[in-house]
Length: 296
Length: 175
Image 1: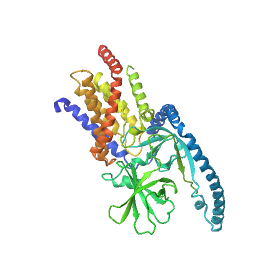
Image 2: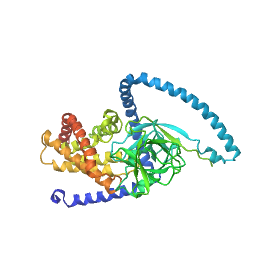
Image 3: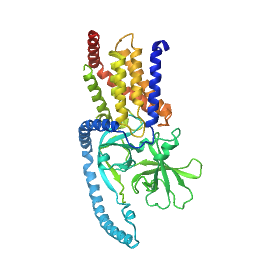
Image 4: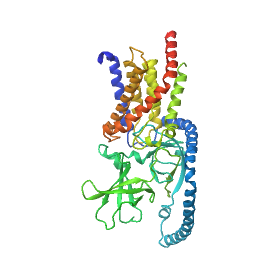
């Protein structure tokens, strides 16, 4: 083995190892912003990738449409029903909104408090998806110039899919929920950093927990630290939404449905296995980035 | 200048990896069983077998770094660059004595690919990016990926070998 390499080559290999390990260590984890060479490379490549991704998507979409043609009639019927329901809900919503605004005026809410729930949604198109199975990174065509910042929540039409992890000038990377594959063996900071504060729809004042990691083997998210003491408990089939308590994600975004309730690690809390609503992380077209308003 | 076309081909393969293939590969293979396509790696291995290992080293490092930067999300820069460079170089060493038949070159590519997957997994485990057990990763990610990439290598074998060997003989003539 050593004759194969020779002294000089072995030295080179050692040098390379040292340099690369240092590079990996430095770029891993919390790091604020990207340097300009990274941005230039990323933006240039992303632009070229866009040329490929869109046509491929359209062609694949066409075949998918043909497959769905048979279901169209059924779907149409259901949609018409939901539409009438939607119209009724809008009426109610308008009324409630006006009432809510009035009440806030009376209670003298500050401008910041009033604006807190007024989210704006930005549509981004997917440029490319990483072929690396360990890091589920998706690049989208919104960047610093569009006001994107790190840690913003990203949704697809189905529900929450991830957060913005790195931003460059014209593009940014999305870290998908499936990338929270913590569990045993992953460093504590990495999982803790990415926990999402969550609650149950309809039981917002009783059930709290943290979406901690993605279980690769079960293909589901694990929600931990749900208190056993509260009167109302999380049940199978409940819808899990973000609670907004973590200050990172806005509140009320749908995450998924509870598949199973289990006793937690130390026996004093519950864990819930949550089936994410946006399941197909690998075939994304458009995503929505949620911008939380900032009032000085 | 002679290698410009080679670099362009690799760049095209790199673009394909992240864009078109996600739509071609059936969704069943992208859930629990994860097929990841590393076409740049396959071409780098071909270069290492049929041209020389130094060219493979350079291309492996360069395109690995490109991959690292473009898909730099929650992990780190340097894994793919280091691994692709190293694997490209090592594969060149192994096959140095005999430029064999299709079987031996496919074996070399399979071995190189497994080594690549193993080093990537090792690095991610070392830096605690992943906590999965090696057995699970082997059956759900490594094995399917290697098989699919081997299929791609077989598809490319005849045209790519011809092209690369003509390139290699030209460079010998120049010297």
